[in-house]
Structure formats: structure tokens, C-alpha cells
Length: 118
Image 1 (tube, rainbow, N blue to C red):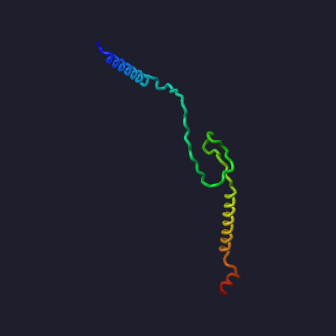
Image 2 (cartoon, helix red, strand yellow):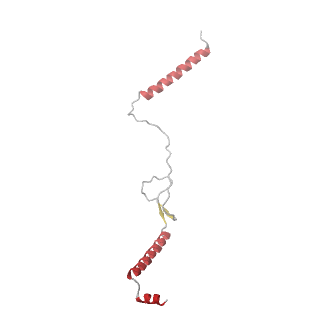
């Protein structure tokens, strides 16, 4: 007569074999076009952004966790400092253009006389 331990071992082997057979059949005999339905939680990817300029944020147009599209306005920056820099650059351009006009016009007779006197 088989002992109790050998009966338990045979039963365990039978259960494991049956489980493996069911798993194999489910994977290989299932319809490949059938959708897989699962439940769970999807974690979103966090993306860090970096603007090309530095400025103070005056308005956020989206909330944290809100989905956004490519090209969507996320924040509005304070443009006071940038506007001042633009005005300085425009003034520099005007001064350079005036100096270029003077150089193209040539020396005035007063300037020639002053240069000859020294």
C-alpha cells in the first residue's frame, strides 16, 4: 500500500500539472484578436518643463493634474522686464543707425576744419 506521504505528493504533482495545463491552454488556444480586459491604476508620466526665458509667473492657465495638449498655454509670464530690455535694444539700434547715417554722409566742413586745426 502506498504511504500517506506518497499520496499527498502524487496529489500535489497532479494539481501543479493541471494548473500548468490550464495556463498553457489559456495562452495558446485563446483568440488573439480578443481584447484583454484588466482593472488597475495607470500612473501618468511627469514632464518637467523649462522656459527659454526667466520671468515671474503672473497667471497659471491649467491646474495640477489637468491634461494638456502640445502647444497649449500653461502659464503667463510678466513681460515688464522683457519690454524694458526690448526698448533698450530698440534705442541702441536707432543710435547705431544714426551713427551709420553720419558715417555715410561724410565729414562736415566744420569737422574737417577742427581736425586740421589740431
